[in-house]
Length: 255
Image 1 (tube, rainbow, N blue to C red):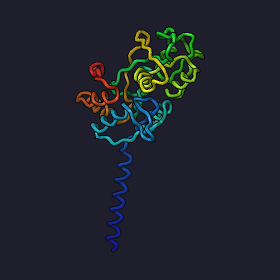
Image 2: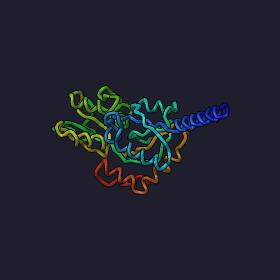
Image 3: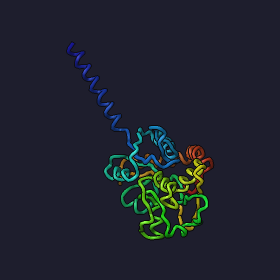
C-alpha cells in the first residue's frame, strides 16, 4: 500500500511538473485589438490579418502561444518589462523604436492616408495645416504630422484609432491620419458615414510592419525564420487575399 501510494504521488508530481512546464512554455503575444482589419474584437475573440498571420507563423515555428489585448501604449511597456514575449499590432519598424526593441523582418508595407468627410477641401497633406486632425497617440501618423507642422494643439491624439475616427464623425476634427488599410477598410464598411480617403505619397512615405520583441528576447530567430517561410510558401498570400481581396507584393518585403 505504501509503495502504491508513493508511486501515486510520483505520478501526480510528474503530471504537475508537465502541466507547469507546458504553461510556462506558452508565449504571450501582445496586441491592441482596436485596429481593424489588422486586429479587432469579435465578441471576446481577437480577429484580423495580424492574428491569422501570427497563427501561421507560430504553427510553422512549433511554438504554443496566447494573444493578450494589452492596448497600444501598454503593449510597449509590457515589452520593456518582458511581460509579453512579443507583439504584433501593425507596428511600424523605425529607427526610434529599434533603439529600445527588436523586430522581425517586414511582413506588411503600409503608408499613412487621410480620412475626411465627403465634400472636404482637403486634397493633400499640406491642406491639413491649421486644421484639427486626429491621430492615434504614439503612431507614425502623429510623427508625420508633427514633422510637417510641428507639435501643436490642432493635432488631437487619442488612445486608439476608433476614437480618432469617432472625433471626425462628431465634427471635432476635419480629418484623421492613419494607415491606408485601416482608413480604406473603415470607409468601405461604413458607406452611410459618407467619408473619403485621400492619398498623398509625396508627403507620407512607405512604412513596414514587423513583429516586435523585447531587446535580445527569446525565440526571435525561430519566429523570424517561420515568418520568412510563411511568406515564401504562399501561406502569407492566402491570408493577405482573405483580408484585403488582392495579391500582395511579397517582393517588396524581401528587399
